[in-house]
Image (cartoon, rainbow, N blue to C red; front, side, top):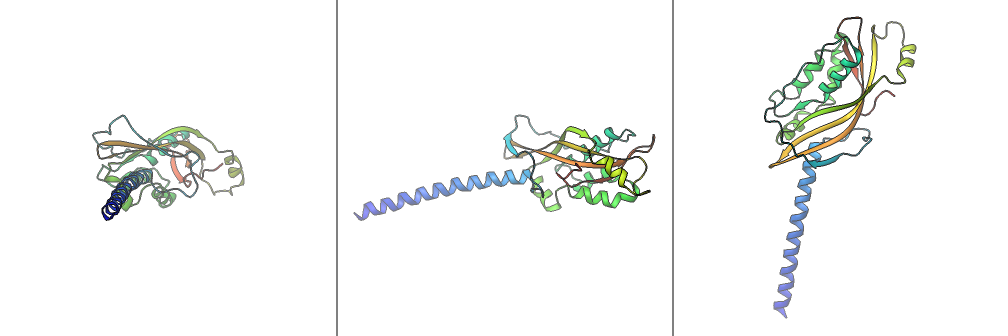
Length: 221
C-alpha cells in the first residue's frame, strides 16, 4: 500500500515538472514575441499583430542610416520621411540616435527640437534597444497610402497669418511595420498596421523641410 502511494506521488511530481517546463517554454516564446513587437501604443492598432517564422534569412550585413531624400515634391518627401522614421537595425553600432539624426537633418530650423522629440517617441529607448539587439532586430515600413487629410484644408483656413510657414502641407501615411530578428537559429518576424501624419513645408523649388510628426496611430483625420 505504501509503495503504491509513493508511486502515485512520484507520478504526480513528474507530471507537475513536465507541465511546468511546458509553461516555461510558452512564457519564453511569448516573451520573445513581446520583445520583437515592442510596447503597445496609446491607441490600439487597427489590425492585430501576427508572428510567424520567415522563410528568408536576415540580411548578413546590417543596414546603415540613410539620409532622407531631398526633394521639392511634397508627397515624395513625405514617403521618404515615413520610411526613414521606421527604418532601423540594432546590428548597426550607432544606436537609436544615429537613425534619428537623418530626420533631424531635414527638419525646419525652428522646429528641429520638436521634430527630434517626435522621432524619439517612435524609436526604442536605450534599454529596449539593447534587448532588441540581442536578437539582431531590424525594422522597416511598407508604405501603403499617402494622402492629404480631409481636415487639412480647414486647418489651413483657420490658421492665423504667419502661424504656418509658406508651402506648409500634411500627409497621412498608412502602412505595415515589419520587424525581423533571430531567436536561436530561427528567423522571427512580426507585422503591425500603423498610421501617422507628417507635416512639412515645400516652398517653390527649394527642398522640403520637416515640421512635425503626429503621434503613432493618431493621424490628422
